[in-house]
Image 1 (spheres, rainbow over the protein chains, first blue to last red):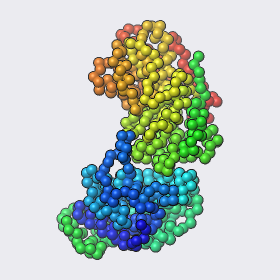
Image 2 (image 1 turned 90 degrees about the vertical axis):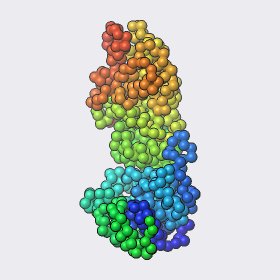
Image 3 (image 1 turned 45 degrees about the vertical axis):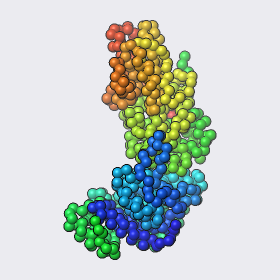
Image 4 (image 1 turned 90 degrees about the horizontal axis):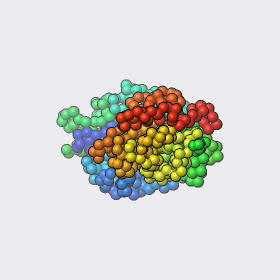
Length: 306
Length: 334
């Protein structure tokens, strides 16, 4: 499954796919594709040691929430391969990046392109905010901050089980404002969870705008290092930098990679909307068609028909 | 004389958990306060100290469950839902993780006041989908709790008693069962938790006064045995009294009123417990009296139903069991 394509091409494919969806549907979590495309491409294509998907390539429709009477309940984790001691376990924390996650699954061949047409449709499991049953998800992360704690619990359990696989979390920087993240860091450092690592999309954006205007959290690397974790900061669009960061020794420590990114990387025209980037919804037909023309050009594709 | 058992949870958990290495004992910095300190000392590999960080503890437990372990969470009841409610829902309840939450200090059983008294836990826990809710009322129920909770295919909240616990029952707790402590025809009295022991103080005096009481003890709030309550409710003449160490809104009293209204039964209901009020710090005896859900308050409620005074004095009730503030059966801290 790994390395059939190069990660740069996958990243471009993610951007194109999310952009096409955004234009066709008059809105999407678009800037998140700009900032995180390289990270997700690299995770699925290179970094994660995971098996082939065990789920249908066209996602099944919603089959009910977990309930004692719902015997057929399944999470979307199977898109990341089977759960097994030698494989890594992947937790996707910022659930609003779901569209980017689905685009990634398509680009790496774990989901059929048709799956995206089910996005945010009633009765579909391909939900706008990734649910436990959504492709590639294993838990509800719509409430930000719980991903790292959960991964720490998994990593602790996997140490007891003597699993060789790691536990990895994809996070976003906005959720570092949640106190629970720091509780999770405390416990991961205290228990020397070196089988736990995270990559954080540091795009400096949150719902209300730039984090520096909403609630500046200062020097993240210094904070995380002072908590006792191994924290490395890299250019989040530089895949070679990710490879090197992952090689850093972090014996007895969790590894946190801060991927510094731009929320309009690859779609510079989006900058016009700054700081309203959290969810891109066009205000007018004029804005939509102009953005279609300009960004298509940047992405090297024909304008999207809608 | 009633048998008093010293720290029944301590040996119960140790006996149960030591037999299954997949069980992990989590503690939120309240290890001796939740009577798992000797387990920690004897089975350190099954003990996970989580510190004072409940939000993390709930999600971390979810993660442990995702890697094949069975976490038993130990802390005070209030700390399992007030601060980490979001985590309780997203990491434990929604995914139906097999996590056993042992919440100590139910209601007014602590002198530590509002911040420590879980007075609304049953109302909150029973409305959470997928959650099972159990309350222990005596030492025998505490001795059954690990096995009963661990059989549940999903998360369980247990309202736990600690320290010197009376033995009232000689049969183990059976999930969703309701104990019939006394049969009678005039009034249906339904009690739970420590209120059962309290209500028993009035038993002899009521027998002497010729009042026929059908007394039930409820330990499982969810799944609740509605059929049994309905069956017994239908035949009592005067009405129903509930007595709970909890707010009267949302807990046992409310659950009975839901059954009464659902089935259109012409029954009056008096709900004893905390009436839309927080409590303050004090002894159990003082607080149950102050807030009107002690044995004497029960007598007064029965008088309302029968429409006449029973001439029972407080001295006529069996002596309340007073726990020492400091004793060997208690944790050093609160």
